[in-house]
Amino acid sequence: MTRYTQKSKIKEIKIHRNNEEETILAEIIKNPKGKIGEVAKEIALKEIKRLVSEAWGEYNSEYIRKACLQSYLLCAIRNKEGDLIGIAPIRKHKIFNRDIYTFGLSATTPKYQNCGILKTMDYILVKKVLIENALKGKFKVEFVFITPNIRTLGAIARVADFIYPDPYKIDPDTHKIEKADAETWRTVKKFLQEEGESYRSLDREGNIMEGFYDDKPQLLFSKKITHRDKRVNDFGEYYVYKNKGRDVVVRAILNIGKIITAKKEIPNEL
Image 1 (tube, one colour):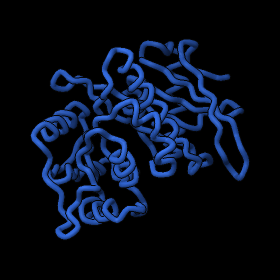
Image 2 (cartoon, rainbow, N blue to C red; image 1 turned 180 degrees about the vertical axis):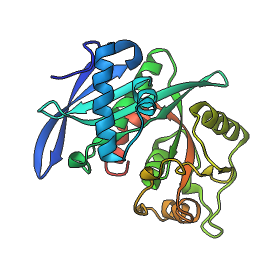
Image 3 (cartoon, rainbow, N blue to C red; image 1 turned 180 degrees about the horizontal axis):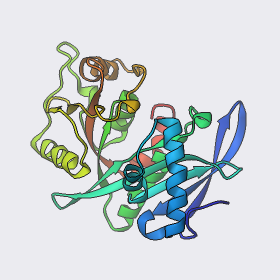
Image 4 (cartoon, one colour; image 1 turned 90 degrees about the horizontal axis):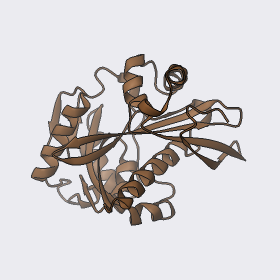
């Protein structure tokens, strides 16, 4: 198969598209900056830029290089013809002497959207991070990430040892949740500083961020997302979708046992 480096791992995945089963191949690369050769990096940059432009709109090459080719882990998915159809990175920061992981610029080509590929890539990468840490005797891993998707928030809340904000803890009468604890608040602020993303405001009640899309309007969700649980829907209504362009900055602590079983517990939520 076409791959960016011989030092990567290959995983075969079955998906359903157009009512037929299809086999796709995932290439998982640790430290792509160091593992992918210079010629292959330029090929990867062109392929990823094309994919991202099809999925989200135009991004400059340096943003894509930093987001994907300088990430901690990179998952690249190809179809049987060898075309790049999906990309997902995970980045790692050292914050307050703790390893903090985050999701990066993920995309699938329009022909393969709604096949569960984004969910699959994230699951593969999170599981790899957890296994790596477990082998070092660390069974809990900390993530901070930005999302407007209440389904993602609701799904991760069900399997996390700790999460803020937790949409299931919204008050049914006031539709309020408690403000972020001190450790979460200082961590997410430092995380945003490390990421270098611009924003206008961050509210400690719900970790609601505004202004993230001012320089990237192509990423705005075109429709409001709903969830089967009323509490999660209420969180979305009162905190996320009240004003256009809001995001949630999530801090979550995950453990390997719950994530390994998460695919069976919540197969259609992420």
